[in-house]
Length: 228
Image (tube, rainbow, N blue to C red; front, top):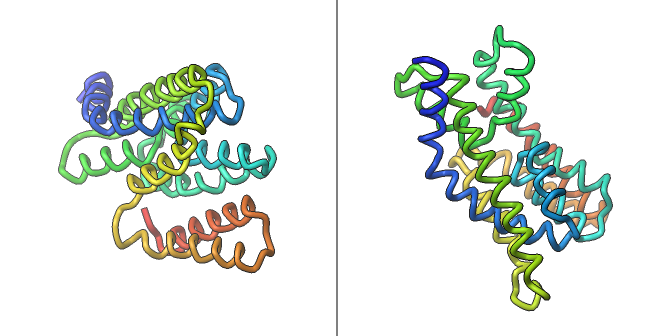
């Protein structure tokens, strides 16, 4: 299969999942507007970061008044799992120029990674360009939806009066559900929840740093367990 055919295959097969990304992308856009972010800022954030859960947590921390440093670190901590994701497909990147490595890593998400790995296990001859094709589809859906969400929110005089501020929570629940892959996630997820709960109960840490600690602890457990 040529790179172009592989790219188109990944792009086509990711479309059903991309529709789900549009839904929580719109929700994130509404929430970004509450953080006083405009369409340009939201689009730039999605382009440079391209990580739904991390962006939601970071902006939620900003809205909560935690500060830019705590928001940034919270987003990074939540995205630590992507180190494991890209490590599990490191053969995709061997021998490629730096820009292809950077593009492939940037476009690696839970959804297109799982799609490409599943296709390989089924015996299909796919790899790097299939991953990138799927990532391109998700990227387009995410950035477009988040900007549309900001524009939608800007047209509403008082979003909180309509209960739209709950979209943060709803969007994060939806993303968490898509990330759940079964019983093998119990240990890292349970560790994260327990660490955050203990930190909040003891009042030793600000909620922002409790989330960061929980994310790091969960990623560490997943790494030790060899979770792909």
